[in-house]
Image 1 (cartoon, rainbow, N blue to C red):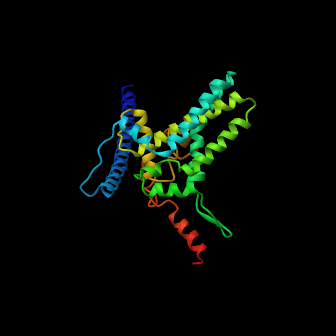
Image 2 (tube, one colour; image 1 turned 45 degrees about the horizontal axis):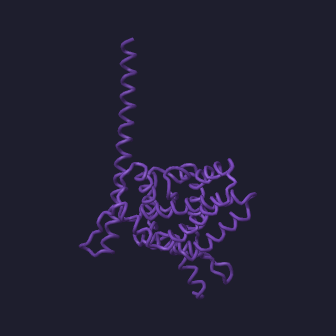
Image 3 (cartoon, helix red, strand yellow; image 1 turned 135 degrees about the vertical axis):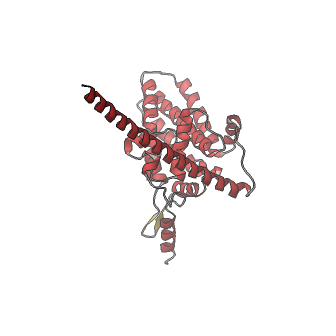
Length: 277
């Protein structure tokens, strides 16, 4: 009886030891990834501020004020204000005005993932004499090349104007009643402003404080400094990426040599083919 217990205790100790070793190895790998990311950020800072310079940590209030110096928050904010005002005037509140926002919030990480993968990471190509390389994809490649270039963090205003017009048309024409369409537009404004704010904050000099925001911050930095083929969501961590298989452990994938060179070779090849090279 005693021998059996001793054997079980020994096996349990071996299992616990193995788990401790794996946990320590994982923490070490994560620390290495974050160390490389910090080194790259420091190199970016040196390139921007000069070899001897360093950006200071930004407060949340200062980040909020800086956020409003760019066009897209004003465009989205204006749309949001108009949608909220119209929604209040329209009245006609129903239960669908409660479940539609809940559905949109739940679906938003998956929407982010699809847009990021299919549009922002679009590979440049040619169709006959036509170059298929939309503005959003071009700006996103520039954003990967220089994640510290703040204007590149935001949705380009040229594309945003068309997006707002498109969403407005959907809200006014595609719903069975005006009130529900205006609820949809209000949520589009809130989600869009939340996306722009979160993305800006991650790339600013604001330092994470809460555990939830640190997870979101780290998730997006892994996308920019570890491997561009994973971690596609911006406003959440471990949601759509986990479901769709793009949320590996940082130690499970190699650091990509093209993480700052997103589709640059394809873009060059498309340009050269247009010139007849």
